[in-house]
Image 1 (spheres, rainbow, N blue to C red):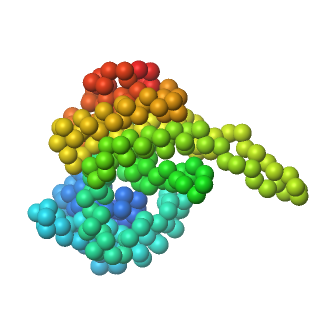
Image 2: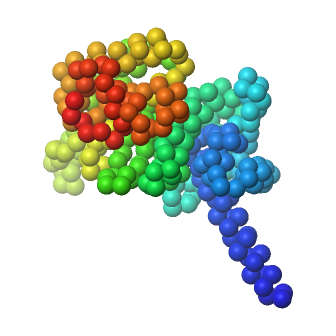
Image 3: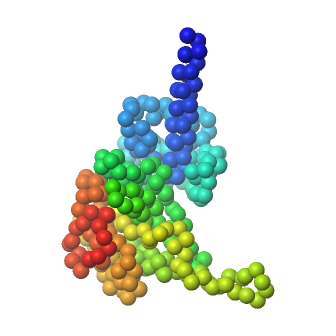
Length: 306
């Protein structure tokens, strides 16, 4: 009798430890999430009280902290502490990830909460859609702020890199969540940056033997991806007119020769966050930037052909 109880407790503790680890890994990778968001990512099949207890435990251990957002009905937004990040980045699944910025300051966390929580909500749209469709998009398949060098000390840093396995293909996407904090032209200029990344070949590097320069002949993105990820713009923070202005700005820049060449190879699509949350990403809610018809709508998995 004693042995049976011991085994049951051991299994429960093991499951709890795995759940704690995933919770900290997700918070470290996603940067921030509300209690409800984290529950939907981690354990949608159980009562939310279990997620609340898990987060409270991690907080008591100094691994995560929270900030209250009074302008949002006193929501609690959770984020990893500096100690929590150090612990999580030692794990194999996160070892190559960069440490999140501003993780130990509740004031800084509160000020960046709007955008970060919108990015997390966008992640949930893909995670939950994959679950409904029986496809594969796991919590750690959403990687925020992956740096890509494009020379001259500059980088392309999408809000997130998405890995998604559909029934017949492995898909990757750079996701940009725009909350109308910059003008339409600045948003559209991100297409120029992605076009630069698509064609960027590193300059000469010093070889092992003196006076020999080795020049790469391959675009640097090919070291990471078998195919350049598609680019998804998720638009929020403005009404229908503002959304339309942003979509039109993206279409206008598609006429630039460098961007046009890029768009012949890579799908780039835009949709309002409200449509994404209401209909799901697999619905035909995305407007292809490279399409001659700015009102055309497709699903996000469509081919790059206009």
